[in-house]
Image (tube, rainbow, N blue to C red; front, top):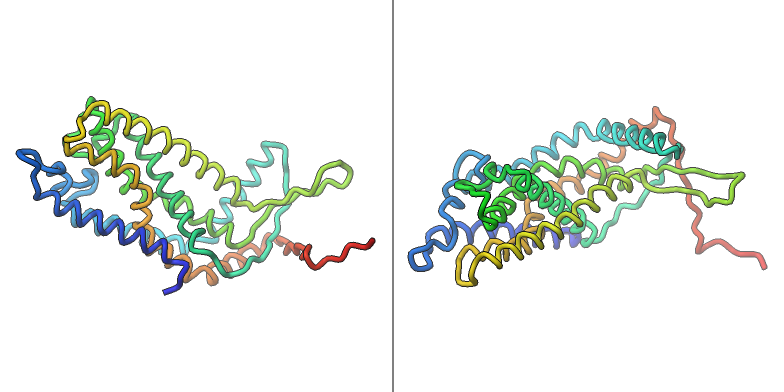
Length: 296
Protein backbone atom coordinates (compact mmCIF):
# COMPACT_ATOMS: atom_id res chain seq x y z
CA UNK A 1 0.00 0.00 0.00
CA UNK A 2 1.33 3.45 -0.99
CA UNK A 3 2.40 5.56 2.01
CA UNK A 4 0.30 8.48 0.77
CA UNK A 5 -2.83 6.60 1.88
CA UNK A 6 -1.74 6.02 5.49
CA UNK A 7 -3.66 8.92 7.06
CA UNK A 8 -6.69 8.21 4.87
CA UNK A 9 -6.73 4.59 6.01
CA UNK A 10 -6.46 5.73 9.64
CA UNK A 11 -9.66 7.72 9.18
CA UNK A 12 -11.29 4.66 7.61
CA UNK A 13 -10.43 2.45 10.59
CA UNK A 14 -11.61 5.16 13.00
CA UNK A 15 -14.98 5.35 11.28
CA UNK A 16 -15.36 1.57 11.31
CA UNK A 17 -14.38 1.51 15.00
CA UNK A 18 -17.00 4.17 15.78
CA UNK A 19 -19.77 2.18 14.11
CA UNK A 20 -18.70 -0.96 15.99
CA UNK A 21 -18.70 0.95 19.29
CA UNK A 22 -22.17 2.36 18.58
CA UNK A 23 -23.44 -1.16 17.87
CA UNK A 24 -22.02 -2.42 21.16
CA UNK A 25 -23.18 0.54 23.26
CA UNK A 26 -26.69 0.10 21.91
CA UNK A 27 -26.99 -2.93 24.19
CA UNK A 28 -25.19 -1.51 27.24
CA UNK A 29 -27.04 0.33 30.01
CA UNK A 30 -25.78 2.85 32.55
CA UNK A 31 -28.18 2.01 35.37
CA UNK A 32 -31.70 2.28 33.93
CA UNK A 33 -30.49 4.51 31.06
CA UNK A 34 -28.84 3.20 27.86
CA UNK A 35 -25.42 4.65 27.17
CA UNK A 36 -26.70 5.82 23.79
CA UNK A 37 -30.26 6.27 22.49
CA UNK A 38 -31.65 3.04 21.05
CA UNK A 39 -32.51 5.02 17.89
CA UNK A 40 -28.79 5.04 17.07
CA UNK A 41 -29.04 1.31 16.35
CA UNK A 42 -32.63 0.93 15.15
CA UNK A 43 -32.67 4.05 12.96
CA UNK A 44 -29.22 5.72 13.03
CA UNK A 45 -29.77 8.39 10.33
CA UNK A 46 -33.52 8.80 10.12
CA UNK A 47 -33.62 10.03 6.53
CA UNK A 48 -31.97 6.79 5.38
CA UNK A 49 -34.37 3.84 5.59
CA UNK A 50 -33.31 0.84 7.63
CA UNK A 51 -31.26 0.18 10.78
CA UNK A 52 -27.62 0.99 11.52
CA UNK A 53 -26.09 -1.73 9.34
CA UNK A 54 -27.87 -0.67 6.13
CA UNK A 55 -27.08 2.99 6.82
CA UNK A 56 -23.39 2.16 7.17
CA UNK A 57 -23.33 0.24 3.89
CA UNK A 58 -24.98 3.14 2.08
CA UNK A 59 -22.69 5.74 3.66
CA UNK A 60 -19.63 3.93 2.31
CA UNK A 61 -21.24 3.04 -1.04
CA UNK A 62 -22.67 6.45 -2.02
CA UNK A 63 -19.27 8.24 -2.31
CA UNK A 64 -17.98 5.38 -4.48
CA UNK A 65 -21.01 5.64 -6.78
CA UNK A 66 -20.54 9.41 -6.98
CA UNK A 67 -16.88 8.94 -7.95
CA UNK A 68 -17.84 6.49 -10.71
CA UNK A 69 -20.28 9.06 -12.12
CA UNK A 70 -17.64 11.78 -11.80
CA UNK A 71 -15.07 9.67 -13.64
CA UNK A 72 -17.20 9.69 -16.79
CA UNK A 73 -18.40 13.29 -16.43
CA UNK A 74 -15.15 14.85 -15.14
CA UNK A 75 -14.21 16.86 -18.29
CA UNK A 76 -17.70 18.37 -18.46
CA UNK A 77 -17.60 19.30 -14.76
CA UNK A 78 -14.24 21.02 -15.28
CA UNK A 79 -15.46 23.01 -18.28
CA UNK A 80 -18.43 24.25 -16.25
CA UNK A 81 -16.10 25.29 -13.41
CA UNK A 82 -13.78 27.11 -15.83
CA UNK A 83 -16.65 28.96 -17.50
CA UNK A 84 -18.05 29.92 -14.11
CA UNK A 85 -14.59 31.18 -13.14
CA UNK A 86 -14.50 33.31 -16.31
CA UNK A 87 -17.93 34.72 -15.49
CA UNK A 88 -17.02 35.54 -11.89
CA UNK A 89 -13.83 37.33 -12.92
CA UNK A 90 -15.68 39.18 -15.72
CA UNK A 91 -18.15 40.51 -13.14
CA UNK A 92 -15.22 41.53 -10.93
CA UNK A 93 -13.68 43.28 -13.96
CA UNK A 94 -10.67 41.03 -13.77
CA UNK A 95 -10.84 39.24 -17.16
CA UNK A 96 -8.14 36.60 -17.35
CA UNK A 97 -6.50 34.34 -19.86
CA UNK A 98 -6.18 30.62 -19.22
CA UNK A 99 -3.48 28.04 -19.65
CA UNK A 100 -2.17 24.71 -18.38
CA UNK A 101 0.86 24.23 -16.16
CA UNK A 102 1.60 20.51 -16.15
CA UNK A 103 2.29 19.24 -12.66
CA UNK A 104 4.18 16.27 -11.27
CA UNK A 105 2.66 13.03 -10.05
CA UNK A 106 3.72 12.65 -6.40
CA UNK A 107 1.70 13.80 -3.41
CA UNK A 108 2.34 13.76 0.34
CA UNK A 109 0.03 11.87 2.76
CA UNK A 110 -0.78 15.07 4.62
CA UNK A 111 -2.11 16.70 1.46
CA UNK A 112 -4.62 13.93 0.81
CA UNK A 113 -5.70 14.02 4.44
CA UNK A 114 -6.24 17.80 4.32
CA UNK A 115 -8.47 17.35 1.28
CA UNK A 116 -10.70 14.83 3.02
CA UNK A 117 -10.63 16.84 6.24
CA UNK A 118 -11.94 19.95 4.46
CA UNK A 119 -14.78 17.86 2.99
CA UNK A 120 -15.69 16.59 6.46
CA UNK A 121 -15.57 20.13 7.91
CA UNK A 122 -17.76 21.39 5.10
CA UNK A 123 -20.21 18.51 5.67
CA UNK A 124 -20.30 19.31 9.39
CA UNK A 125 -21.03 22.98 8.68
CA UNK A 126 -23.85 22.15 6.24
CA UNK A 127 -25.38 19.67 8.70
CA UNK A 128 -25.22 22.32 11.45
CA UNK A 129 -26.89 24.84 9.14
CA UNK A 130 -29.72 22.42 8.33
CA UNK A 131 -30.27 21.72 12.04
CA UNK A 132 -30.23 25.42 12.92
CA UNK A 133 -32.86 26.01 10.22
CA UNK A 134 -35.14 23.66 12.15
CA UNK A 135 -34.78 20.43 10.16
CA UNK A 136 -32.93 18.30 12.68
CA UNK A 137 -35.77 15.77 12.56
CA UNK A 138 -34.41 14.67 9.18
CA UNK A 139 -31.48 13.02 10.93
CA UNK A 140 -32.47 12.05 14.48
CA UNK A 141 -35.48 9.94 15.47
CA UNK A 142 -37.41 11.47 18.37
CA UNK A 143 -35.79 14.85 17.71
CA UNK A 144 -36.78 17.67 20.07
CA UNK A 145 -35.47 21.07 19.06
CA UNK A 146 -35.75 22.36 22.63
CA UNK A 147 -32.92 20.05 23.77
CA UNK A 148 -29.56 21.33 22.60
CA UNK A 149 -27.99 17.89 22.97
CA UNK A 150 -30.64 16.62 20.53
CA UNK A 151 -29.44 19.32 18.15
CA UNK A 152 -25.86 18.15 18.68
CA UNK A 153 -26.90 14.55 17.97
CA UNK A 154 -28.71 15.65 14.82
CA UNK A 155 -25.55 17.43 13.63
CA UNK A 156 -23.52 14.31 14.44
CA UNK A 157 -25.82 12.08 12.37
CA UNK A 158 -26.36 14.65 9.64
CA UNK A 159 -22.63 15.06 9.05
CA UNK A 160 -22.30 11.43 7.99
CA UNK A 161 -25.25 11.78 5.60
CA UNK A 162 -24.12 15.09 4.08
CA UNK A 163 -20.51 13.94 3.68
CA UNK A 164 -21.59 11.09 1.45
CA UNK A 165 -22.91 13.64 -1.09
CA UNK A 166 -20.81 16.79 -0.61
CA UNK A 167 -17.77 15.17 -2.15
CA UNK A 168 -19.29 15.87 -5.57
CA UNK A 169 -18.42 19.55 -5.04
CA UNK A 170 -14.78 18.78 -4.35
CA UNK A 171 -13.86 16.25 -7.04
CA UNK A 172 -13.81 18.93 -9.80
CA UNK A 173 -11.83 21.32 -7.57
CA UNK A 174 -9.21 18.63 -6.91
CA UNK A 175 -8.96 17.70 -10.59
CA UNK A 176 -8.63 21.37 -11.54
CA UNK A 177 -5.75 21.68 -9.09
CA UNK A 178 -4.05 18.43 -10.10
CA UNK A 179 -4.36 19.24 -13.81
CA UNK A 180 -2.66 22.61 -13.43
CA UNK A 181 -5.37 24.72 -15.07
CA UNK A 182 -4.40 28.33 -14.30
CA UNK A 183 -5.65 31.84 -15.01
CA UNK A 184 -3.23 34.68 -15.58
CA UNK A 185 -3.10 38.40 -16.28
CA UNK A 186 -0.14 40.40 -17.55
CA UNK A 187 0.03 44.18 -17.07
CA UNK A 188 2.60 45.49 -19.53
CA UNK A 189 1.89 49.19 -19.04
CA UNK A 190 1.12 49.17 -15.31
CA UNK A 191 3.21 48.86 -12.20
CA UNK A 192 1.63 45.53 -11.28
CA UNK A 193 3.21 42.07 -11.16
CA UNK A 194 1.99 39.18 -13.26
CA UNK A 195 -1.11 37.68 -11.67
CA UNK A 196 -1.20 33.88 -12.03
CA UNK A 197 -3.20 31.43 -9.93
CA UNK A 198 -4.86 28.06 -10.16
CA UNK A 199 -8.49 28.18 -11.30
CA UNK A 200 -9.31 25.89 -8.38
CA UNK A 201 -8.14 28.44 -5.79
CA UNK A 202 -11.26 30.63 -5.78
CA UNK A 203 -13.52 27.61 -5.27
CA UNK A 204 -11.28 26.08 -2.63
CA UNK A 205 -11.04 29.36 -0.73
CA UNK A 206 -14.84 29.70 -0.59
CA UNK A 207 -15.51 26.08 0.42
CA UNK A 208 -12.66 25.77 2.93
CA UNK A 209 -13.19 29.24 4.41
CA UNK A 210 -16.88 28.67 5.07
CA UNK A 211 -16.25 25.16 6.40
CA UNK A 212 -13.59 26.26 8.89
CA UNK A 213 -15.38 29.30 10.33
CA UNK A 214 -18.79 27.65 10.49
CA UNK A 215 -17.40 24.52 12.15
CA UNK A 216 -15.66 26.51 14.90
CA UNK A 217 -18.81 28.51 15.68
CA UNK A 218 -21.06 25.45 15.62
CA UNK A 219 -18.76 23.37 17.82
CA UNK A 220 -18.56 26.17 20.38
CA UNK A 221 -22.34 26.52 20.44
CA UNK A 222 -23.16 22.84 20.90
CA UNK A 223 -20.34 21.94 23.26
CA UNK A 224 -20.86 24.92 25.59
CA UNK A 225 -24.64 24.57 25.44
CA UNK A 226 -24.60 20.85 26.17
CA UNK A 227 -22.18 21.09 29.09
CA UNK A 228 -24.35 23.83 30.60
CA UNK A 229 -27.46 21.64 30.29
CA UNK A 230 -26.21 18.19 31.25
CA UNK A 231 -24.21 16.84 34.15
CA UNK A 232 -20.96 14.99 33.52
CA UNK A 233 -22.60 11.73 34.68
CA UNK A 234 -25.27 11.90 31.95
CA UNK A 235 -24.53 9.43 29.10
CA UNK A 236 -25.73 12.04 26.58
CA UNK A 237 -22.60 14.03 27.37
CA UNK A 238 -20.76 11.65 25.01
CA UNK A 239 -22.28 13.27 21.92
CA UNK A 240 -20.68 16.73 22.18
CA UNK A 241 -17.37 15.06 23.08
CA UNK A 242 -17.57 12.96 19.91
CA UNK A 243 -18.41 16.10 17.91
CA UNK A 244 -14.85 17.31 18.50
CA UNK A 245 -13.39 14.19 16.87
CA UNK A 246 -16.16 13.87 14.27
CA UNK A 247 -14.40 15.71 11.39
CA UNK A 248 -11.47 13.28 11.71
CA UNK A 249 -13.74 10.24 11.84
CA UNK A 250 -15.90 11.22 8.88
CA UNK A 251 -12.84 11.26 6.62
CA UNK A 252 -13.07 7.47 6.72
CA UNK A 253 -16.14 7.54 4.48
CA UNK A 254 -13.99 9.10 1.74
CA UNK A 255 -11.11 6.59 1.88
CA UNK A 256 -12.28 4.38 -1.01
CA UNK A 257 -13.21 7.22 -3.41
CA UNK A 258 -9.89 8.95 -2.66
CA UNK A 259 -7.98 5.77 -3.57
CA UNK A 260 -10.03 5.50 -6.78
CA UNK A 261 -9.42 9.17 -7.56
CA UNK A 262 -5.66 8.77 -7.18
CA UNK A 263 -5.56 5.51 -9.13
CA UNK A 264 -7.34 7.00 -12.16
CA UNK A 265 -5.87 10.52 -11.88
CA UNK A 266 -3.39 10.17 -14.77
CA UNK A 267 -6.12 8.88 -17.07
CA UNK A 268 -8.52 11.62 -16.00
CA UNK A 269 -5.92 14.32 -16.57
CA UNK A 270 -5.28 13.14 -20.13
CA UNK A 271 -9.01 13.02 -20.84
CA UNK A 272 -9.30 16.57 -19.54
CA UNK A 273 -6.34 17.82 -21.60
CA UNK A 274 -7.93 16.29 -24.71
CA UNK A 275 -11.19 18.07 -23.98
CA UNK A 276 -9.47 21.39 -23.28
CA UNK A 277 -7.54 21.17 -26.57
CA UNK A 278 -10.55 22.71 -28.27
CA UNK A 279 -10.15 25.81 -26.11
CA UNK A 280 -6.52 26.17 -27.26
CA UNK A 281 -5.18 26.85 -23.77
CA UNK A 282 -1.43 27.45 -24.01
CA UNK A 283 0.97 25.42 -21.92
CA UNK A 284 2.53 27.65 -19.26
CA UNK A 285 6.26 27.19 -18.79
CA UNK A 286 7.54 28.52 -15.46
CA UNK A 287 11.32 29.00 -15.39
CA UNK A 288 13.39 27.16 -12.82
CA UNK A 289 14.56 30.16 -10.83
CA UNK A 290 17.14 28.21 -8.92
CA UNK A 291 18.91 27.44 -12.21
CA UNK A 292 18.85 31.01 -13.51
CA UNK A 293 22.09 32.96 -13.40
CA UNK A 294 22.07 36.60 -12.40
CA UNK A 295 24.56 38.71 -14.26
CA UNK A 296 26.60 41.03 -12.06
